Amino acid sequence: MTESTSQRRILEAAFAAAVTRCQADESMRRYLPDPPADGRLLIFGAGKATARMAEVAETYYRTEFPQAAVSGLIVIPDGEPAQLDLIDVRRAAHPLSDERSVRAATHMLALAHDATANDRVVVLISGGASALLCAPAKGVTLTDQRQLVQAMFAAGARIDELNAIRKFLSAIKGGRLASACSPAPVTTLAISDVVGDNPDIIGSGPTVPSYVSRDDVRDLLSRYAIEAPQSVRSLLTAPQEKPALAHADLNYHIIARPIDALQTAAKLAAEHGYRTRILGDDIEGNAAEEGARMATLCANHNDQKLALLSGGEVTVRFSNDQHAGYGGPNREFALALALNLQTAERVSALVADTDGVDGQSGQTGPVAGALVDGGTIARASAHRLDALNHLERHDSGSFFESLGDEVITGPTRTNVNDFRMILIN
Image 1 (cartoon, one colour):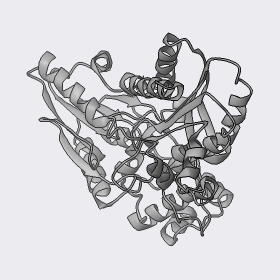
Image 2: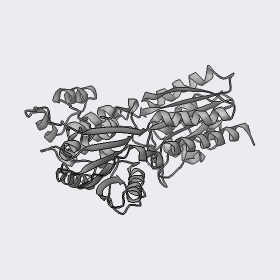
Image 3: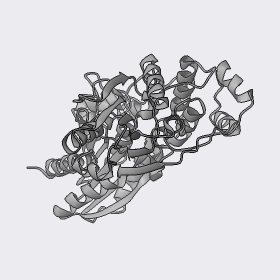
């Protein structure tokens, strides 16, 4: 077995262990509240990890409280498996909302408004909920909401900035779902996919009071030079009052975080004799620039047996003429890393999104990310691939597909954002 092959097997095993650690499992049960004595237990949710979360919750209540009146509604992406009997499952589009997102969110709000003080509500939130639950604010069309969010994506906006826009344009985000549930007590369980694990950013915080002002939105649109659609401009000039989102009985628990994935992978690397260094779970910025920066860090440690781990959320910023290729921020990071590792021996890396979907899908289905090493660019040249040209055209997808170096997992049933692990031997 070559050293590169050995490193790749460690990387793949570490990524699998990290993803498994951040899935909802039996440990989630300790956060679930008892059902009410004389009312209903309503389970709502949205996100890429929510189907698994709902399965754990439904099994728990059916086993431990067989007489409980359990019902509810979750919204998950197309292709995500779900085995539920008591909870209604809806599917909708991601990352841009569609009419199904609107219908599901509208129905969930109607169910929430029907809750009474005798009921109890459990809300299950994970990454992807912002797109899957879309109930536009009064006067805003779905088309205009999509147009604005898509422009923010293309401009390379951070997730907290995207979700600030989404909350401003929403009738369900920013605590409005919890407000609709009042007076029923609400317990939220979340899997974090955001830097800082801020509850009002995870899924745009449907159960967390969070006020976004007109000035906040104007500042963001100005920063990214985005012209708002007419319905949004009207909303920005209309009188605005801080919404009444107070709720007497709210509980919130994060059951898995990005740092959990990194710590799990670091433990496995240590078992293989690597000294480990977690650079942080909060790395943001331009994917190509961060990939190049990470290569420099590798060069500074090339005399050590070391595992470098990091998470966060890097982004890709397109100009109007840069849509020739396909890929995602993790593969773009990996390509930039590979370009800057050409002279580095005994270095291998895995860069992937923990939900199994890195930006745009591959030609044959979702791709989580890519594997690279010091020989990636030489192999690319042998295949007549111009790595720099692929990077400049944001075409990391076809680059790694041609090399057979994609990381393909299928739906992972969780989402704790980017995962990056580099082994220096």
